[in-house]
Amino acid sequence: GIQVEQSPPDLILQEGANSTLRCNFSDSVNNLQWFHQNPWGQLINLFYIPSGTKQNGRLSATTVATERYSLLYISSSQTTDSGVYFCAVEGYKLSFGAGTTVTVRA
Amino acid sequence: GAVVSQHPSRVICKSGTSVKIECRSLDFQATTMFWYRQFPKQSLMLMATSNEGSKATYEQGVEKDKFLINHASLTLSTLTVTSAHPEDSSFYICSAWDLYGYTFGSGTRLTVV
Image (cartoon, rainbow over all chains, first blue to last red; front, side, top):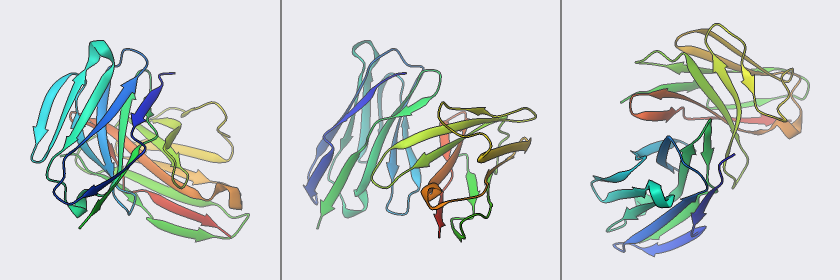
């Protein structure tokens, strides 16, 4: 199956800071999504982004499919951004990376 | 956007009993739904793909007789954990695909005592 690697595994930010999360994948994919899992376990779909760049408020994402990586940018971080961010790619099934745990401190 | 509803959100059951978890697509039809399992501090692992009107497809290593899946309608899939044991305690999440990508239910935290 497709291997998905996320970095860094953990990230501690001061409120207001910017950050970049990375997702590398091992093969061509049909779909790539970024999710945020909140402390209650709910997975929120942030971006459906098999290629190109998208922005939604303080979050943006870029996927370079030819180089098999995607980046998630968080700007002006807030405490509510805390949680685990997962990258998931679809070959024949949706495969998740191990996630990046983000902690934003006030 | 699409909404997937999952119930119950939390369940505690005695060892040896069975537990049923429901997953509903509220505003769209889902011919296919997916069931995942997540251990603490770990990622999501696909357990099985639920197909409306046909048998589910299980991932390698998942016991079909322990994790029974029924997808009886275009909006409902159920996962039944049979003869549950403490090692089945976990967070179970369902999902479905719509035009905007995969949407996930809120998950069910199962504790077997």
